[in-house]
Length: 280
Ligand SMILES: [Zn+2]
Image (cartoon, rainbow, N blue to C red; front, side, top):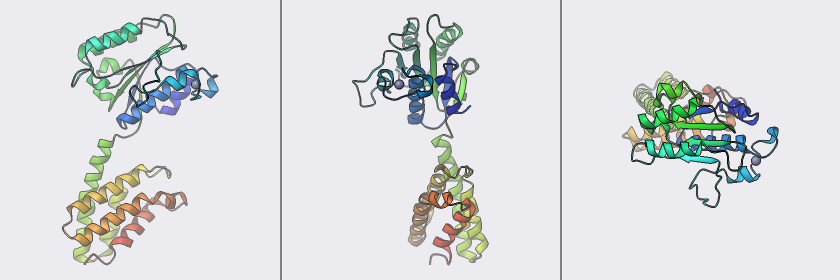
């Protein structure tokens, strides 16, 4: 399920009571939780939610995000209280608040910031709460985790999972795989001088994937990360310099894509620009 669909449901007041926000990175998960909470509790009419300026929107912020004056009593964030776990005591404290009516807004939003660290007991306490319907006003629980698979199956089966995009860790693994193959293709080219190896090197970078969306910066960032990693592995300074220059060009390539040039053509062209003729 995509975030914009869920936001539409939140705007209309039909959002599922428990939502897992997973994928991407921690900052993006927190941002998604704040945006959805504002959408749910915004004082404006449905089509304007979240307005960003009403008394609710302005005060719904991630705690300790450098703005300690802003706080909304109906937006509660439960953070990991132990070194590696979110304790059952802290979870029960939060759930007690869920027994009250909202203080100001038309509903309440509870966020578990690191749901992957919920202890078994804590997860069960939460689960019991999800099973009881809200008494007076709508009550929403957001569970933030790197992957939905980090949560107990019982929790997963009670919640709608919203995927926010591939995790950075996944991108790093991809970049390091690509770096190996890219370095091998460059070495083969340096040895034989056969252009096919340069085409292959460009093709390797295409393996970053996700090129369908011409506005997406992600594949370029992954390809550039791969090329930078390759640079670190190459013994020759001249080859390293070329890699770093290529990485820079890759990060600057999205405008070419927006002019309608295919990603493969851009990759072929940039790799040839920096490596045709070898590096000695
Ligand atoms: Zn608002």
